[in-house]
Picture (cartoon, helix red, strand yellow):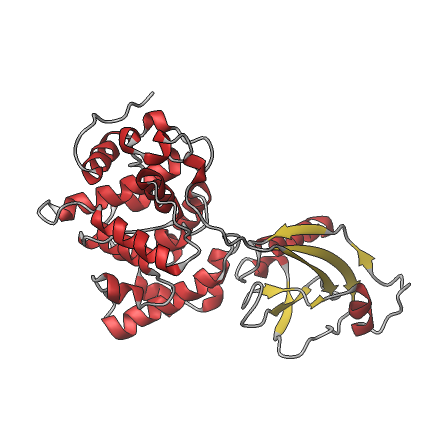
Length: 359
């Protein structure tokens, strides 16, 4: 069992010492100061678990090892590599960001937080992480894990749904940074990683392991016995539900008609079978009656998005002429071609299952 570091020193000093002794050191993006690799990991890790990201990170780098190759790659290839990670706007922004770095920065990531945050898909926290890890810049971060650690240690009970309070927490986070007199090139990466490690493995949302934390004796939330109270955010997200009827139209060669989704909305820019909002509308597009035996309804399933439950109803139908929807270009694709397309994870699983049944 690991033990917390000795008491004493600033919060930054404690975190740095703890990270050196007990933090994570095995992750592939920790062994580099290459901005491209750090940036890629930071984007992939947004709202995604480390265990999930590891495989995607390695596969992505094998195909697109640097910012130049990413910028030159077709968006479809980027989306295909991202397929299954979710939050696909990250992949589109990743591609656009690489193109901006090549076109406006000569293929080199800028070193300041302000310039990094001006790039597509990079917010203030991600910019701070890249600047701290790669360039030793004295910059705070406030991702979900770090926000939880700092609000608990400080007893910061102001409602973060209010922008003024969010700004105040940023100021507090900046005040806690390692001293400008320290060796920032070495200290900032370890401090930043230490906060991330504490949030990921010790200061958990529920049942935090306070006895293992290097900040336990100065943590206001632990002192008050209410760590799960923090962070405070009163605004709650409302969940909704939506039903999609998916037309799996198969030609004589067994290929499936897939269309690119519109540029905005759910699964924007990805490939998907044509979608209707009701069974009746789907059958009408095929020119069939409601009791037609020409289609086969496959088992429905639910895909959970951040704010929405998507109830998917696959319908298998023959036909060489696709029921094309306006403004959604598409084509006939077989199983060997699906791997090169950007497909949402549930659609890829659905198609793979269909291919297995046909084999």
